[in-house]
Image 1 (cartoon, rainbow, N blue to C red):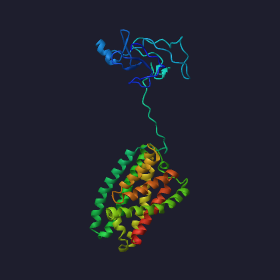
Image 2 (image 1 turned 60 degrees about the vertical axis):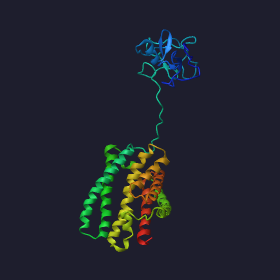
Image 3 (image 1 turned 180 degrees about the vertical axis):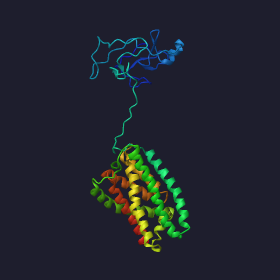
Image 4 (image 1 turned 90 degrees about the vertical axis):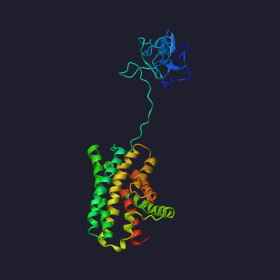
Length: 359
């Protein structure tokens, strides 16, 4: 076909600019062309490749020999003449006002309408003042974990030379947790306050709505504990004993240690762990996930990262369930008091069941 196609005609689209109106077809390869891709040589229409082969030298696209004014619709300017649009510009330039949807005035600063860009839907920002990314949170956790591991090795070397094995285990749990949470929260607050100029309210550290959130924490804490125990029992039947980590082994020895060491373990599991872990995983990591994906994938991924961060394969499923539910509490109330309450209740019941009752 050596003549132009009316802009209103229905048919194939230009492969380079699908949104642009087709105006011609290459006489050599048959490719459909828009005004920006059409080359005219000897009063015949070519694509760029065929044109270069025909004339032996590349040239810029020229205007169509003629083109018809699209039908008058909302958004179109009135016709410039009987059946035709405004005259094209100088040869070698796209016709003025010709856009991907017909004859339109180009945006300010453009001599002609730019090629259409692929549309990418911008995700809704759910948590305001939380511009940090997921990768930033992962880097903070890795740095904190490596630094705490190095310091904990030195602490262990000092403790094992002065105390018994059981006492060393309890003291190591406490001091290593303090070191880890210090690095973790230090990196978190640096990212939020110093690097991103945000505030602690963006981490969910607010008292507004705390009463309702705490009620949700108590309401879900016990069911979470029951569900986690059921999952742990199933995991034990499939994979073997679940008390393989240092903390689980220490909890089972509560009857043989002093009240002071028991108090240190209670402080670690019921106070430090819920507060510090909720600030990082729900207050810092979850908003970064939630601002980039919908609610369910963000909760699932946060629960998986929370469980993986404990580095215990057997306890992965119970902790994943706990992390998912704590995200739900935080999503609903937008304050960490509820998730901290549920986390503390869960850990306290685990401590009571394993250490005091010996189950």
